[in-house]
Length: 115
Length: 111
Image (spheres, rainbow over the protein chains, first blue to last red):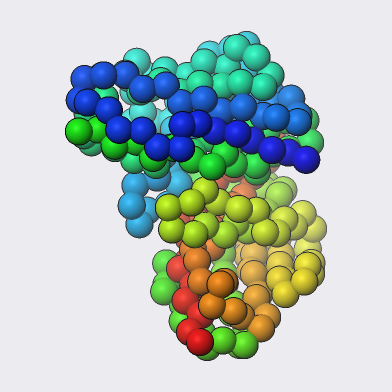
């Protein structure tokens, strides 16, 4: 149990465009979803926490208008990187948590390259 | 700022040896502790969780927790080259609804 599906696995986009990443909990209801970013050879950095039906809570330094998070249902959260720039190139990973899951199930990650 | 600290390594051990990975945390209210393994370019994979003081064994892995010392460790017995990865320690906040990760320790198991 506790399967989280994330896609796309990788995406290349032009600078200035927007990219949407989806994270789905397949076999449980995810009341909370976490979005992380990881640059090469660095640890995971929490970007934001989203609770179903309410606005996401962003970590300090993360631009909420640039990284739009939607968590409209108990099984789906999306992260949209708006007006992407090369410095946004990174590995983005979601994690879903439910009543018995403290956010320890990760999606497979999305490698974003902005050219 | 609540922190989780790990030695970045690399920790190099010969095949068949015991690898010992350590982690300290600053929030005394933390309740749940996790060890993840992350291969390069991949998402973290949960390998152990521990919630109470003492040892917890699962196959070749043993997690050890000492809340008084705010210390959690992971032992890997009979280390294999396939164990070579970065090991991330993660700790929940007192409410149990958020994970904070350490920087990870890179483990290298040499044949």
